[in-house]
Length: 446
Image (tube, rainbow, N blue to C red; front, top):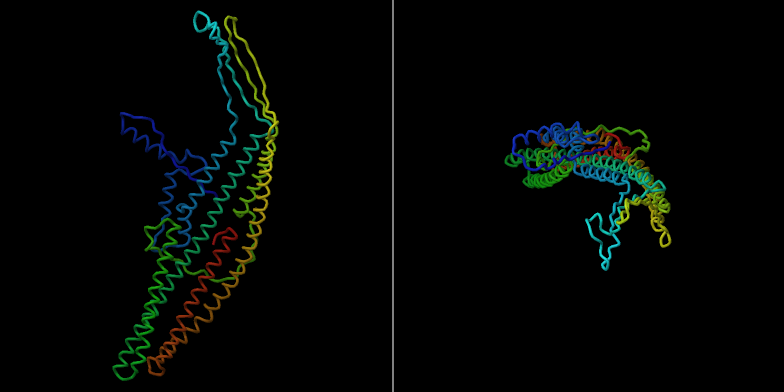
């Protein structure tokens, strides 16, 4: 998918006495601009898209975040500017050499003068000359083909920026969700410790629990407070990163990940898509380098400059005409440097294309292995480990409430449960991140 944007700047038409009419015309122009701009959305339409794509920060789904990213992300807008530069380069490449018009007056003698009469009768030799360079060797066609390939490569680069930014967005989204869930777990653990501390204080007052056991519970409560503050800091950091990607810095504190964790499942064996943007851009740059080599070699095909002149030399009656042809002589330089540089650029483009393809294939295999491992680990925690830890903690809590076990037993059970809940959350986050990485490697939706 290619992104492009056009910024409309009304031209200055000078002062006008009818200022309201000028405003009315400007508003009508802005309203009608969108259908008049082929190949790129109008600025007014783009701003409307941005406004409609602003999601609810208090309940942000991944799909809503992706929609917002495509119209508001600053890196995508920068990539659009590169497309516009490449489009301008195509106009430069298609230009033909300009003609040259010259007027020369000679045969002005200081000793004998220029003669009597009007200016038309003066004894001066005046020559009006028009010259036009004719390019040979298909130079213009090769320039245009090279510029078109570079424009297509810029569009592929924009698509790759989109792929990378979607990857970064998904990772940031799941980092935010992990921070939120971890903070919720810590708050729940702290609440349990608060309740446990209150009951322990009653039992100490009744002489049913040692004061040292009460202090152990209080130490765990203080540790839980510190963990909560750390988790809150991590949450703010995750919100800031997501807000930066979505250009929603004003709503940073309200960002909330509303989606649930993806269900762990074994992935299918993926195939490296040959239309992946970075691979496509590398092929297009190789094509542009090949055309650049041909263009450099065409410099040795001599261009021809054709001239036509009209001459008037009083007292001769009438006009005299002349034509001329000029060609360059390669007696000093034959463009060897340009040709050598073009071959070097071609070799570099071939090497870069091979490197990108090899790295893309290795990345895909690594992402597949990561998803398989993360899926197995997440299913193990969800189906086996976490339910067992919760049953053990509930049993220890029940025994402590009825005086059948000591405070150390219930504290150990709670610590174990908190650690396993944290590991289970990490496993689900690792699986979600691995899936996001695999989707980016395959250039597909999450």
